[in-house]
Length: 190
Image 1 (cartoon, rainbow, N blue to C red):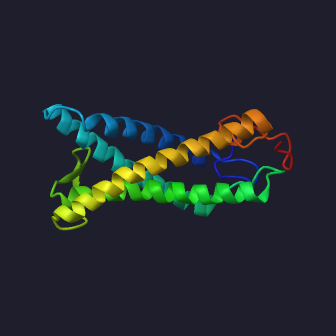
Image 2 (image 1 turned 45 degrees about the vertical axis):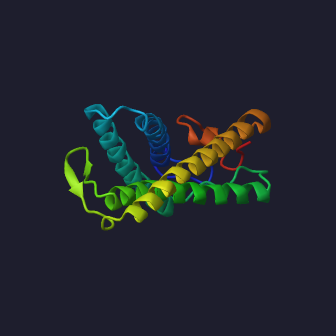
């Protein structure tokens, strides 16, 4: 399998980043939804610290993914895909990237405006993005929360569209993001 993307499929690096990010988002969502109801104990503090460290890791991986996509390009839409579907897919991808960058940044901003220190896996501290401000902290927290729900809707739509293409249209839209897929020919992906 090639490392770079081709016109027919995603390369190994794009696949690796995609699936790492998917797994990390799932883990972050589970942590984020469960940690708010935890009793105020050291376990809650450790869970918040893990959530923040994973969020920073996600931010880095998404930046790498965007940079790699700029370098390696993206496969063409599968042959026969209507233009309106390709357009919706493009807009959805842009929105996913914006949210995957914005949610960790809003978390970092919330953390800064709330006056909390931010560490990455207890290795080093990151600088605050803003001075302490209750109103900014509240705005950033709301952006973080609403961004998560918007991301959830888009991820479900994205996955649903890939499954629709796979199960009902029988094309390679989903398979070309999976390891081991080999297009039958350079032009034929259906």
